[in-house]
Image 1 (cartoon, rainbow, N blue to C red):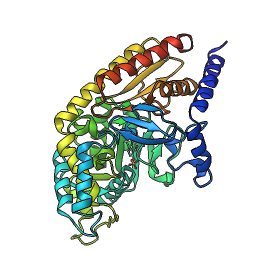
Image 2: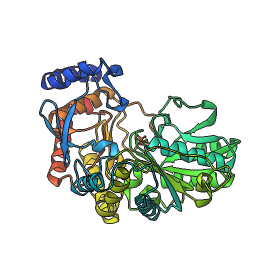
Image 3: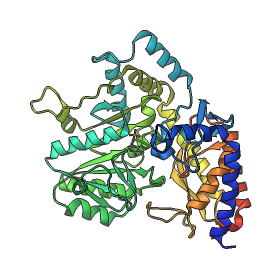
Image 4: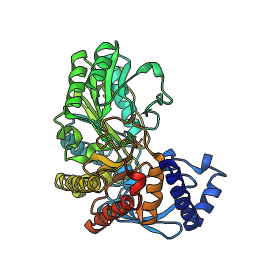
Length: 433
Ligand SMILES: Cc1ncc(COP(=O)(O)O)c(C=O)c1O
């Protein structure tokens, strides 16, 4: 049997077991398609033949509607850093509901406290709040355009900056005017330099220091510094999207890499488990939003300063995800990633990432250090991996991305490494390069 037929046979058997194990998820999905297109309201969560429907979570565990318990390695795509019902976050939310209220339709002292903390932690002179990472990027770009008086934005293939700002390989930007975008190759200094320096009218360069949705592909420090230099040379703003990566060190990935972006965008866990986004950086740039100035850009959002996110985000960052906790989690991630790379060594499978955020890749060539998201992956083997990890009690994303939750016990991490190792042994022939 060739590799594809072998994978197909294993996959068919795994899928049959999945269907037999998850009748309640199937029933709920059948109901969901009656009111949600394809039963889905968040594309990344769609899986065939139907998604697993979760019922509850506690700490680093989740339980599905069929009663299976999993170690949660999805970590809500990095936003779930604190875990489910983290005590500090939970008590802060309860106290805020009881003593403050949800949304006061007015400025609050708490938004000032949180703004100060974010500025200090991520080296921002000014910051504004919004409700998602997508919004943070849209508003940062609006600031860059207003500040420079230019229109175009350089982005990178495989980049993801939100629901309407996706530059997956071969996929045009959705919902945005294509004429506004120049899509360069990630980790390719010459391509980036050319795009930034030789395109007229460039307002900004927007990039992730590690492409998260693109497969946890880290940028080389040389590449990041070259992009920063090129942007400065032509007077375009250098915007780092740290929506996923701000957790990787006390000051985010930018401080690990010695970068000094003009603007930074933030989101995910910084909302303390609630919907959240923020963008900030240079005072002169951010002053385009200063309402005291004539002609300032308007940026209104009903829930921009909602009390729950302002209190929970602040409590999380000041009391739980302290600089020390960030450094420690990244070290735990570095060790886990090294072990996952070790047990997959010499096979078609590998893991890439930075610190506590990583992703599986499976390629026929067995490439270990991907530099771009344009490599053809063995999606059949990744599907098989997903089914089998679920069966062994690990909740992971279908695309293979993992984001560690704080305080995930060492024995669960060990068990995951052993489970991956057993998978490699079981499918040694299929995984041989
Ligand atoms: C790098 C990056 N930017 C922006 C976003 C969009 O954030 P949100 O889903 O909160 O809109 C994401 C989401 O995954 C992301 O990974």
